[in-house]
Image (cartoon, rainbow, N blue to C red; front, top):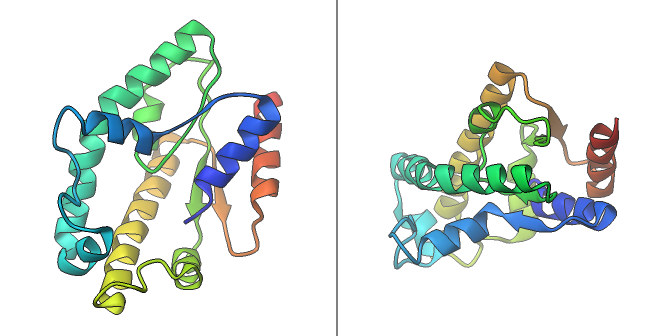
Length: 183
């Protein structure tokens, strides 16, 4: 809920590049191996019935499965010279820091404190859960854990990141990243 997809699509339109979501890669990979942490549950039931520890364990396992396919896709597109914008929550700065290729450029969107809770509340996402309070609490716990991990890895690997708050507009983020790309 930080704007990754929206910003990616704006950049793709500006640069005339294709866009790939790590969610798409996960969907394809799930046809081969069972990596879906939600399993047979609806996302509403998943966030209501899972413990916070299980949510974190699931995210770690899911990302571990996606790391090699994502890395391979980035490697192929970079070596072929075909520009691609890849977005998604399954990318990590630690993984990207291992790619030593001038054709690969990464910018991370990091939510400032309170942004995810504000957007989740406004969106109405998870409001139809049997226990919306618990579903929202668990979703925020997982999302804020993930956000902190991204920020920690950005700082550790000295990667570019933008802090996003409730006043940040997607067009401004896309323009900022575009300027980083062409400079």
